[in-house]
Image (cartoon, rainbow, N blue to C red; front, side):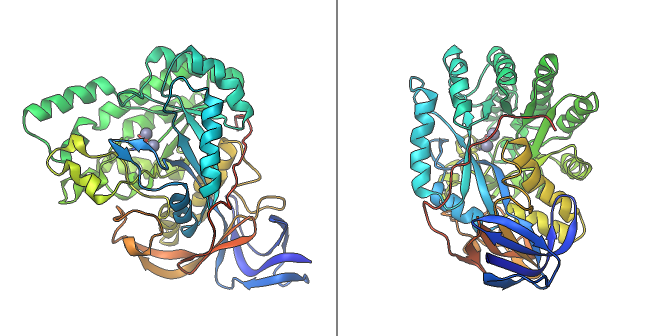
Length: 458
Ligand code: URP
Ligand code: ZN
Ligand code: ZN
């Protein structure tokens, strides 16, 4: 006897679409059967006309992050609640140490205790190495043992950034340990130069956030980071890649056989930099900023071609009043936007409209994230033995995004007004129903920390 049977839907994975009934037992997918196959279950759900998809994984969130003079609005509860209501069943948070003296494992345990009490979805940590030095490098083996197998560095932000020497040492060490280095790549010196220049010229609108971090400033940093990784033949994952020249450098390195991976953000696919000229342009301020139309087109092309591996949100929202700090000065706007609830519906809607294959959306939002970050096949697919993290998707449901329909703590959304064709109507985590037709049905503290395996090249 199964616990749950989802009948008559079309199952979509990264590789195929099939008509199948999905049987769940003890939180796992127990069988994929021909439609109508004889089976008994405690509960049967009809998914006629619907798609059955893997729950998505958001590889890039900043929950309760002290940043930009405040703390990002969503905590572990509201961020994961919001994720589930958009079909995302696992989030990765960038755990960011505050005290440089505290052992990294102690910090992770503290953060995990805090998250465990709050999370509604399953989750994992990437560890941010914001206090570069030999101390953190020497602690990485213990961090790996805790199932935290990816490390993030920033080449920007005072008090967080690392220098080339540390970055190079980290790539070496991480390769030796089986970790994966994730990098936020922009050229800090060039940003500072432009910001100073624009301040002196009184150019303080959000447009100058883009101008001070425009295409070549990100591209140069991407190219340098790729260069170091190639030198060491070390794997490297570039987070929130936003510019065309960076994508071209990525593609060139991959064509030479190097293990350079990349993520982009749905905001960079949806908008171009003209958004910063809008009256509410400050709400779209994030770093790297949204780039020009040529970059947007290139990101779409690379995503479809497979040279961009994942789409993740960089969910790091701030309240309107906080965004308003920069009404007259872009340098005072806390950097970051929302996205955890809208990413999967947006990309699936693009698939529904024929702009990308459904399989590619599943690959970049579910299967590649799980594979690259060491939690496949437990997560990221619909297969016998995998966790029953499932989404029932209604391809006919028309939704216009407004902040009212979202489930986070934010008071505005950069996705306001976006018209979607198709929407998740039910979400299951390990076989339990946590969302149905606009209603959150899960509970805080029910999510689990997922220990991850070391990185392995595909
Ligand atoms: O603007 C952003 N992206 N804020 C969050 C921190 C980061 O850079 O990822
Ligand atoms: Zn970043
Ligand atoms: Zn980020």
